Image (cartoon, rainbow, N blue to C red; front, side):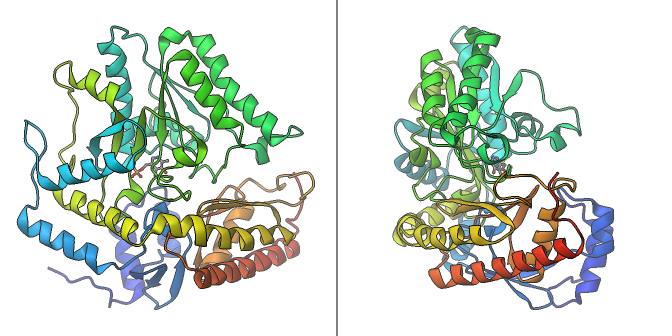
Length: 465
Ligand SMILES: *Cc1c(COP(=O)(O)O)cnc(C)c1O
């Protein structure tokens, strides 16, 4: 077999990558021309690439490497589990210790009566499970017509047929015949971009009440559930106005529809509490989890399900659903070790009491930059709205995303991973980030914003649309 290693020249690796590897959410032809940036190592909050550059990962991979890269203790747990029991399934009345121990631990950490875990391999799969779970629930209750799920425009719930349909992203719907039937979408609580002259509080209420109007329009006997991310992540770190979630909760309670909190990003400390639902006062019947559950050390996700749904669905014969890798022993052992680390190192407390307050102070100061209309942060999820006119919160005249892309390229060149969503810049660094690492993040972000601003100026792109 040909050995392909970290020691090969970057150009050779890029050529092989372009020849054989189809990338997610990527124009492969365009990437082939440019060549992928090849990451070879990770330690703490830093990545190393094949050119030996040290990159501060402001996104924790894809919002997942919460305990930081390069943990030997997690690697050892994985190796031990592979030797002891590399795989067994949880179908057909069998179980194993990692799946049992992790479910018990998750039930302990999750609020209220969220005491049951249905495993998946990812967040997308878990949301597919949720579609089937809530429909099955109402079916068993004798209301099979109660099968519509209400979600939101610009939500992200994954990229499978189910997850992509729950999500509200036009780019995903445009390819492959999505959304699937009986999933409908209301407006998002994105005040900065859509709130116009309303106050954030008024706007939050208005967008929440679209849920009530939609339930009335469809008829409550048709609506199974509402799903939302406590804070929209991939949609651009949209932190809802304070009025939004209490009103959504009131409406779900009033009509007795199920509430699914997609905690794939917000779960396990990201917002400064164990779950985003705690930060925003949400009482969900189901939580979707993935990403931070294992800090990305192994692919695993799941649904945390309340007593009532678990008893109803479990009490009605087989639930005809499952994945080969439900509760995979290596992934479960890794996730359990990750949860142990979060508790022993008091990482949630670190976010709440150290990293968030310090980053908040430095992040907010970026609002003095001429390009920045708003810098927002909850826990360690942050956004910067780029604008040509701070007073009006105007969008740029250029096609949406042009400026954001240019800014991201400057960040990349300055060895900082920040992502752009349209013309918003977003961060979600490892939860273990220290104040001195935050200083480096801010220094590189500022330099990148400066360079982006200068470039826009010289290219005549500082115009409002
Ligand atoms: C990433 C994400 C998903 C999908 O998870 P995958 O593991 O990529 O399938 C679902 N919901 C939210 C909120 C996410 O951020």
